[in-house]
Image (cartoon, rainbow, N blue to C red; front, side, top):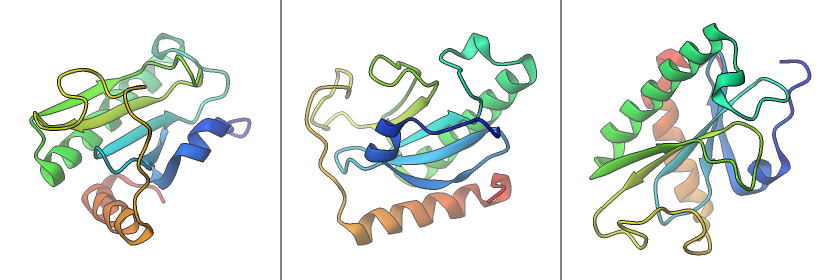
Length: 140
């Protein structure tokens, strides 16, 4: 973890939520969709298969914890979970709450519309609620 650095694009586009044992949790600063991202804190990893076996299992556990929290908080019609990485090669896993009436439905959210940042107070409120939902799993 000592050589791990978060990709600059993720730093620009996201707000920090906290950390699990393996992953940083980020909140995408796009008010069009409730959208969180997990980033395994391992240097030079671009694909899930490159993670050590224990890390793969930990990533799955952390993804499930995040998914459960997002579904409980936002009650989406569908939760999209994907590791795309075409613009950001660093391994990161998107968790996007989707609704039949959202702007991009039924297509993917990536590249459809420019992000609409949250007002600061709303971003803080959403991050606080997510942290509270994940509290038992967070290491900081």
